[in-house]
Image (cartoon, rainbow, N blue to C red):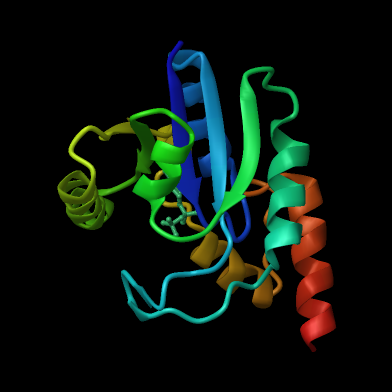
Length: 169
Ligand code: ADP
């Protein structure tokens, strides 16, 4: 049985993530979408700030949108991803690649994780080119400017984003 872990922040989940999940669900017998409880103190663009959505909100959205995939489970995790991968008794990490700029960060992460856990392999998939520019950061920026997000996130997520931004004033 091949089980893979797809870790991320999913703040919030987009059509890009869902595309990666669908592809992963076809490659592996079981896919666990692992939602990171919080951002690491330092992210790819310098010191990380807080996530927009709480861990419970992010989990709820990912669960709702992935329930159509019979072999996909959703969990939250904290700490080193390779520790979580080992805890789940597997050795495959799934990540998505969008652009060349993603590649450098993902390459560093994969090799760092390999140093910590040589038995863990990172497998990359490319989402559809329709989503190759899509990121949660971009969605949040566009939402705060009042953009129509229909092509980027499912309606439930768009609704939650609007509510969240309204509640923040
Ligand atoms: P992280 O904070 O760990 O980067 P994200 O939720 O931003 O978490 O992303 C999780 C994974 O999904 C990463 O591998 C990222 O490259 C991938 N991903 C996100 N959006 C897309 C997309 N539009 N197309 C392909 N992969 C994507």
